[in-house]
Amino acid sequence: MSSPGVERSLRRPEHFRMALGATVSLKYHTPDGPRRVHGVLAEAGDGACTLDVDGEKQTIEYHDVTAAHTVFEWGPAPRKGGAKRAGAAGSGRPKEKGAVMKNTEMMEALTALAVDKGISEEIMLEALANALVTAYKRLPAAAEEALVEIDIETGEIKVIAQELDEDGDVVREWDDTPKDFGRIAAQTAKQVILQRIREAEREMKYEEYAGREGDIVTGIIQQTDQRYTLLDLGRVEALLPQAEQVQNERYEHGSRLKAYIVEVRKTAKGPQIVVSRTHPGLVRRLFELEVPELLDGVVELKAVAREPGHRTKIAVASNDSNVDPVGACVGARGMRVRQVVNEVRGEKVDIVPYSDDPADFVMKALAPARVREVRIHEDTGAAEVIVPDFQLSLAIGKEGQNARLAAQLTGWQVTIKSESELAAEEEGSLYAEGEWIKTPEGELVFQPAGGGATISAVDAGYAPVADDEGGTATGDVALGESGVTDAVTGEPGGDDATLASAEEAAVHIEEGAADVAADEIASAEDLSDQPGEVAAEMEAEIEEAGGPQ
Image (cartoon, helix red, strand yellow):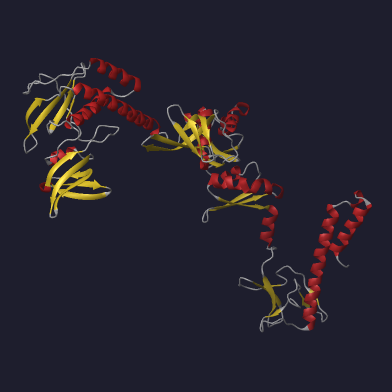
């Protein structure tokens, strides 16, 4: 194997094109005098090249360039455009006799090291050859152009100096291996091989986990503090940030933990793997580990909704009519789902069957609550759910948890109402904001606060009350002194008889409400079972709630 080194002169456009992506150093003419620039070769055309210098593009024409060469930098792979060619003694080119360094033991050790570390022997040899060229060019009498040849079988190392013409073609080559090059080679080989091993190991670790985002891994907890937790995955460590930790979980040193890979970052110190315990994908992967039907495609996990540490809902469907998707995930005597629950530290897991019908899917997603009816409003993306009165709290869940998870699982905005609330809305018995006014014809009507048509007292559901002159009036909660506003003047008004009738109706309604309140208190408590003093006190409360009769 031979190498011209990484610091190679660039004289022609094809030389620049071979070095694309490499770091180069250019010396060129400007109106202000000669200048030197150092950057990454981004483009190489027929008449000019473009360098990326600290993020800025700089184009330089070839006829202005007086000197150019690539710059030696360490990297995980051979630099782009670096030339290499096989060569050995006796290849037919004219040479002058020089020193020959044989390193059979070094090659054997290099081969064993490559096998042990899992790194290609050719990669390490090429890195060694490049490093030896750089070491040779630092010698006082070194030629401007040279390459190093390494015999793969014997470890023989030679330095071949070159003389190039103006077009960059080789016109003469000779053996220019220094007499003390064995000592230089030994020191360089040690440094290069160790560094190359570290770089190759980092690259292999990164490639091992680079495509595993969304996968699940098992690690041993190594370190825990307020900012993060470290998991030992074997060859690498995973980072579990505080934001990806479940609030009520405690991570004990030395215990095993499963986590979900959310990101793999490539850093100078090797790959950094970020994992999560809160991601919904963790539950999905845990079920795939426990339920073979999911991996076989017989059962499909359609959606996952999760509130970490509290509750998870999953929707499953079967592609085989003979397989129950829920039963497959639960397992015999609940063994499969129990394994998942244990891994998420006791978090509750609800498994519901998936349905293509949105109303049916929303109804099943609200389990364990029983739903009477679901009304889908596709224009607003809302689902109106009607449940029996005694199922309302169960459907909503603790702090709205069941309703939130159902909305996440189905993708619909879920609104839950009881049967009594629905009946009240349909009957129009819910109170509206507004005021009672008197029309020019003397009729009492209700004017909604938001505007719109007025509503008569009879249509509003208030029974007419006979006045002193044989007419009728309707009462509501008193507004001001009379509760009636003149529609013409906008001031409280009305004749005495009409106002008196309205007040009488209002009193009648208030007395009815007081009777209801007294009945509720009396029915809620059985006075006969209470001690004398307590019963007397409760009777006083009932009389106070009932008001004067």
